[in-house]
Image 1 (cartoon, rainbow, N blue to C red):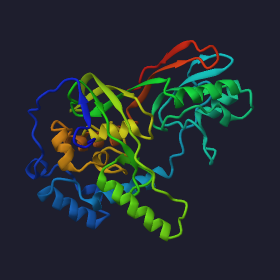
Image 2 (image 1 turned 180 degrees about the vertical axis):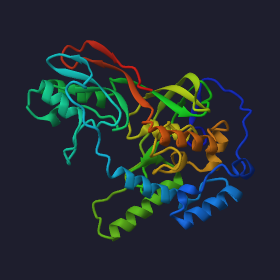
Image 3 (image 1 turned 180 degrees about the horizontal axis):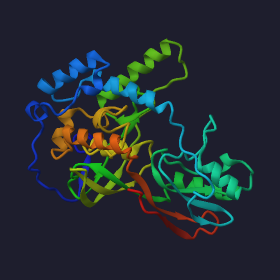
Length: 351
């Protein structure tokens, strides 16, 4: 049902765009970057001349290269002077996290914004992990709330768990997103073929997950279990149409009704309009293309999708300019954890 009708649209626009053909793509994908991988290079040339979707060998090659490049990325370190505090009182600290900075240190104790907040303001428990309420991906910027007291921590966790919190993000996506408003209802699951990434759940992906889990259990990974797909809902509203270099892009407001891992990034990719700078779910990303949807499905439900050549051009400029993921947690509506007074925090995106 979700695959047949994934979008609940408030308005519809007919598209005058056409699907890409091999003629359209001829010569548009340079093979220069694949010189060190003859198999990927040869298959990419075959793709340019004959195929519609990107070959799996090319995707796997680029995934390995991105893993290699990511090994040196542990997150930027910021100082107390660089910390942007939006609000502070005896119970909470609200900060504006820059892109490229971890929310929490994790088990490897990498530099994080939580450490800076803790060092600057402290907390009742004298433990940085007791300040963590929610997280943003390292490359996502925007509003983050930290607890300073145990009561605040308990109540804030309750607010997030019971969805008493409203979050609005702003993003730049590839291509011209239509219609102007809508809702995405794709359930998401862990991609067992490409862990640890997420993907849209389909009957085929669930079969793949069952097979992979069975193989892993037979190989000795007894604790690995198949988890059921989780319902996910994202509302979107177009803010404006612009350009990135010479390529059309859309500035869009995203409101996650649910709060799943990588939900906004996968849902945007499944619309055929991946977020600019998304190294996981964008062009030649580490995760499944189109958020896990087959080309035939996404072409039917999103005829005005960002073409592969358009995504390629944007990706080339992203690499050249070092553009960060263009996803920003712009607004947060939440009750105060002690007074229960409604509060709204906001910050402007850096893009």
